Length: 195
Image 1 (tube, rainbow, N blue to C red):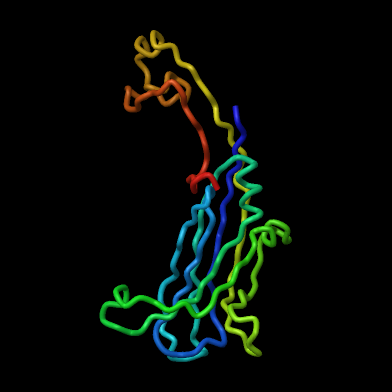
Image 2 (cartoon, one colour):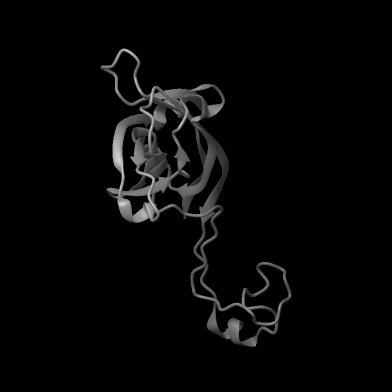
């Protein structure tokens, strides 16, 4: 039996400042999903005709579950934010993009903050007097601890039951809609790899 923790992680891309105008802007985020793998998420593209209107106000929410060890690895990791520019073309996806700047925000700063949420400017160019930056918000909520349960079901009992395939464990009184394996795993949330 192994305990699992489930988290809801929310990332919000709010706005940008001190960005050279021209083309479309978008933010690319990289999140660690364990075992040296990462997930890439792109925000929507906005036009950068006016410095006063560089707003996304876009959120991404991910539900993750894993062991306490995987949660501890997540706390040691970070989210990478890249600000990209793409020229206005008829087929923007085919034109490629240019990375304007990059910043990392450690998950530990979110976990150690009050209410496990932060709002801050991800500084893309720290050497500039007026650095390019993207305002982001990150929030983590603990959903519930779940348990991975191993159940051996006697094959004779399985054949003789007229209730659902879950053998009355769920109480649904269905008529063999589901198939049963010898092991059942119950977990909350959508798994995002092994964190």
